[in-house]
Every structure is written in structure tokens, then in C-alpha cells.
Length: 77
Image (cartoon, rainbow, N blue to C red):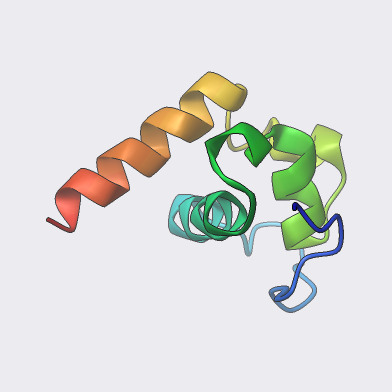
């Protein structure tokens, strides 16, 4: 079952320190723990220790998160 508290968090981020690679890695951790359905902007924000609103600076929504996970997965094959 999905645990609302992430097992691993990145260090506290300052403005401008977050990049797309970090976002994708965090989204993949969320998916690994709770499955694809658990990947939401809110869950990703929690994983990174940010507000949900701040996440929209990096991704447009869940569909984009899932696309980024798929692209990263295919790139690693």
C-alpha cells in the first residue's frame, strides 16, 4: 500500500536548484513505491519537499509526469 510519507527525500532545495532530471527521478521513485496511479503532482511535491503549486513550474500535470517516466524508462533500455 502507498505510504504517504516518502522513504527518501532530496535535501531541502532552494529556488533554481531543481531540474527536470531530479523531477523525473523523484517521479520514478513515487511510481516504484506506489505504482503508476500514485504518481501525482501532489505526491511528487511531497517527495521533493515542495508545495504542489511549485511543481507546476516544472511539469504541466500528471500526464506530463507519466510521459517523462516513460521516456526515461525507454531511454534506459
